[in-house]
Length: 177
Image 1 (cartoon, helix red, strand yellow):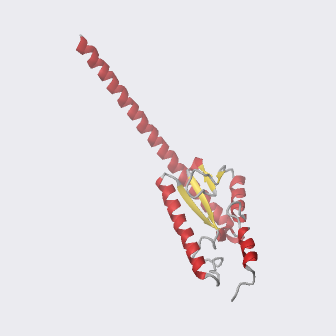
Image 2 (cartoon, rainbow, N blue to C red):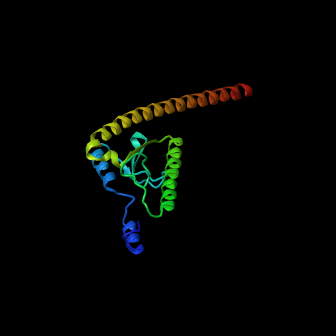
Image 3 (cartoon, helix red, strand yellow):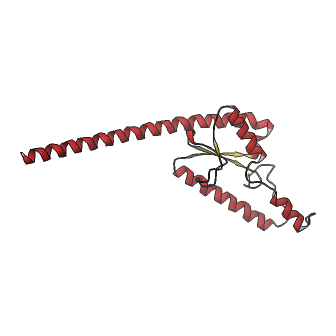
């Protein structure tokens, strides 16, 4: 079936699709803020520019559109009937980039939560937010434990450096006597 829009009309239509501040993303942000979570948006320094970054929880949240990121098994993901090869390549590239970004962030100690657009529908919204809260609590505890462990190792290292310095001073003093 041919496209009912001219190429110029289709281009204009597609160019108005946003990558930031989408309705599902704004809906989730408002709810997280209402629940007391504070966050930063689209942080440039992090791969993939996560939609929501909760540094206190060492967590990045990506709100993925079901169509653009190829949510398998979702009714919102329907492959267009025209220009199929282009869309398959486009969506596959998006998936690969997502996986690369998530892997990189996780290798840097960030926890990644992916929320699909369909999970923010009215019927699933409360459950999705509850699951995000549960995961954030787990992430915060894990991050705090990691920070406590780092602090302990740093203190042990400093104590070792002090012992070495004192020993060195003792040896230097007794060598001159």
